[in-house]
Length: 583
Image (cartoon, rainbow, N blue to C red; front, side, top):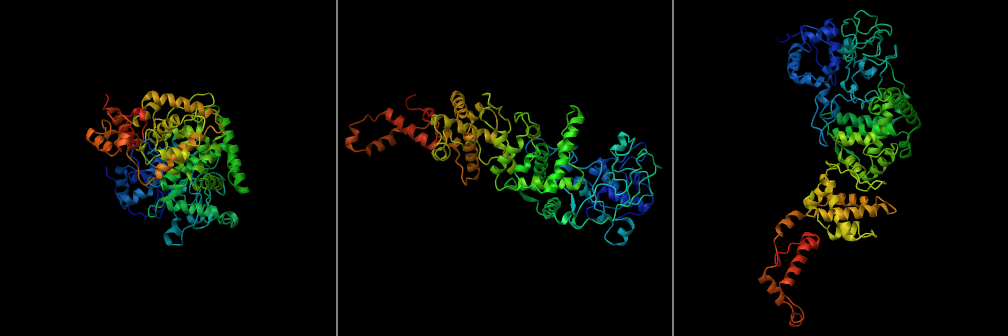
């Protein structure tokens, strides 16, 4: 059954969310938000139903079309009221799960969208002086539900989250006593009340049950509260970060930025920001060893860390990542995000690698079992190329553990590489070896060259050593013997990570090379090749008579010369060369 058009409607305000639109429309029509939701097709017209936060996240096409018809809006205008309209720029706003893996998205249901409460700017709620906003108030911005929006750049102030009268989170459906499961997932409390202005606090008094329609309500005015002039003006860095974030959230502005020293899409930057913020909170106070953190920010992050530790203790073993739940308080969240952004603004990924190593030192478990790295390895979020390049030497490592056990090979590579296995010379190019490995002593060069080729392949495609050896044209026996020798050698080095550091530097060099050689194509083309007799005779004729008489220049020499040419062209080990002449 199609919803009938309402007698009157409203034009959405710029940036307004569905919750704010419902509050303004219901107040104008003198009907409760719950009643308006039924009349507009948001919910079934009969039976028990609750206006839940998922409605605010996304309206399916059928309900969206009914809502548009009832409110005299276009389906596009209705879609822009929902948080899902930001999903392309901000992955946590995605309404449905997307493909998992390094190219996937953060799954929905995470904590990086505020579902139980919202921040707000009192001056924005006061309106812009127009007749409609003087009557119904300004817009409840949908971006206020995002943890990354902590300030109002227009009014140069931090956002608020508490009611000035009852000191509870605004639109919070779980703070009052007796809230049911359905109530705790509501879009906002007191949906059955039609007498509350859109800018009033809707929370019942603390002694009342939240879902009682006639319960006494706080009703405090949230709009027009002036800001402390010194609250944010002294923090220019916070204003600048918020402006950059606002630009990345705006579909009409370029969505590219720099993260981890490399270009990144805005959506990848937000995933980076989430991951690094989580690590800062979990490892605090290690971040202060890397950055000069202002005293005020240091204090709020310290308080946040103490609360997180207490939550861990109170949970009594329940598995939950409390440090990945962003604080609702805008000042605390701003301090964390500014600190994370500073780390992500490093000049190159390798600098970020060392900073991440330091932060990860808080967890004494192996990297494969540490809480933060497990989040990366299992969830495989679509973080930026810069962060993945920085994480690769940490997560995709080949240096054996102190016990002598090698790390389990990752089936999926951490970083994306421009080069592929076909671009790797089985015995390394001579100039690659000279630049990155020739100075390393105490190990036969043959083993270094073999193992470097294998691990370069693993960086590109993941998988075990035997698979990498097959892809670069190396026998599995050679791969296993040389890998064992190199891994034993690295444990005896003053710097056990020296070989891996050189390995990732070579991978970076290949990624930035203007031209890559397809060595697999060369190996295939020369698999049954040799210098033919006619060509060999021409070469022999060029020798002087004195040389001809001093050596045998038959098929054995022709085979040796063919092997020499093959090794030069394919940059492979001579032991692996085909021998079609003598076979």
